[in-house]
Amino acid sequence: MEGNGPFAIVHPGARIGQGVTIGPYAYIEEDVVIGDGTWIGPHACIMNGSRIGSHCRIFPGAVISAIPQDLKFDGEYTTVDIGNHVTIREYCTINKGTKANNTTQIGSHCLLMAYVHVAHDCIVDHHVILANSVNLAGHVEVGAHAVLGGMTAVHQFVKIGTHVMISGGSMVTKDVPPYVKAAREPLSFTGVNTIGLKRRGFSID
Image 1 (cartoon, rainbow, N blue to C red):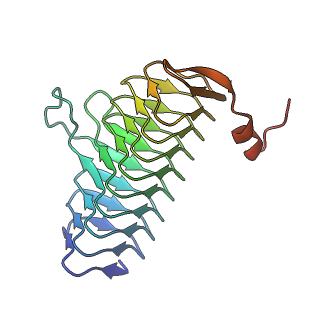
Image 2 (spheres, one colour):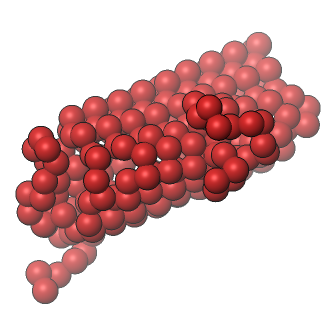
């Protein structure tokens, strides 16, 4: 561990990798694994069941692996699994899983902007961007390289395909197929996500 900020509370049983920086007033419980080179900002709260990869950045006020906001949760052992090179901005909340899936997953190279909420048993694939105040209800699946605009709310059990772009402020109550743009109210298909696909090397064909 590279730096342990003054007044940080780190349980001696937590497994902290090499070169990890922990800011002042951060709180890290016992059943926590943090990979090499990760930065934990001031006042972040890393709770039991957190499995955090290497070279992540977790900003002030974020809460990782709190128990689900699900009345069916009965104290079963579950986790939050976060990949490598993930940025979690201020006041994000990521709840641990329930016995349905046992884990909530965030893939590598994701960006969760401020005030994002990821509920229990969600699966967020690699290179996903969730803009400010996106809210994912329980059991949501988000495919790789998807981008969800700010203030978007996603209903439980909805699946969002890969390379999707969803307009800010959308209410997503149904599945979204891959490679498309979705907007309007009610949510509807508004075209192929051509800009996103070009940026990621897709050909016109």
